[in-house]
Length: 454
Picture 1 (cartoon, rainbow, N blue to C red):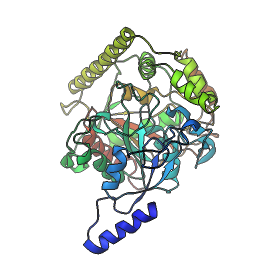
Picture 2 (cartoon, rainbow, N blue to C red):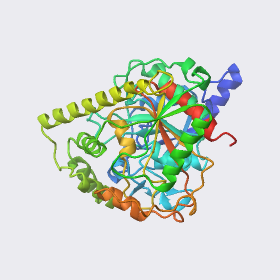
Picture 3 (cartoon, rainbow, N blue to C red):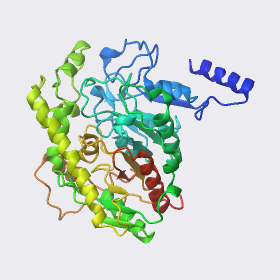
């Protein structure tokens, strides 16, 4: 099918002298959550292996309209959550930089393939960090756009009925130029204008470039969520970015997160699993599968129920989610009283994760990404190309007293610089909802400052 499509595109350009679109002839792999006509969409479940999609997802249509050739589907974990990419269907997807580490989840197949240059970029999906974690752990650039800007028809999910934490779709790629191009393709297509799963916000080309920004920017800086302290290489990366930006004439403002991040994490999980985990378990049982250990561990830690919560409980959770959004909006607005520019901060610099990748079957803390899914703030991942993890600069802080939660204890206990020595380091940059173009432009500025000669 892919070869036939390539021949068709060759014939088109031969006859007309024109490309079909900006992705003309590019072979693109897609995550196994998108419907591709005539092919299975498994979502990592053996029970779905015989499924055959009867129509194509909106994202696949957008890619084809832009000239892309869909040539493969990538691996994803059982249940599709932000876990290591391992399932009974695909086996385990390894990290190309360290085979003892995972490639991230749930778009870990995308991250590993793009890192190996098997696809120029992939349109990954993210409902808790599934674009950002694989990008960070595979030394890639990425964006999780505002979820409401992305059409979702034909994206499969066990929890597809919940609409309060919405899945987003954005590229994992090798440069900000690729991130910008792919974001423009995904967010500007007329295909999505009347798609009931998204808001038709026009792509603003004039604000998607760093040249459109003021010469001096202000950044919020947030390195610890009060739940899990990032490991030493992450802290060093964050502080290096802040130092480099100050030296380049930009401003760094400490940002106080107005949210209890442990409570926010529980709210996220309670909303996501508002129907319980019975559907997941039933689907596994139908093919004789068992729950993967890390997934079982996550369900137990958050006390995910078997069955659905009642309507009153769900309403309380949604109201709590709304209060989080309001309090973060107010805190962001308030930064204009602290900046020299008189504007609120142009972006928030923070961790992607508390770890720079993780060994197989380890369950890390995902609060640094899932928080921004809960409030639907777009964010990018920026690899720090100069930073190499080493025992001298990134030794374990033996004076640190762990927080009273299992995630922090395990995060600190497992770390040693030698074990992480070949892993990349990245930071996350966050912007306000629907400011996706501004976020791309701001990230370009930071990229030029911190990765200036690479």
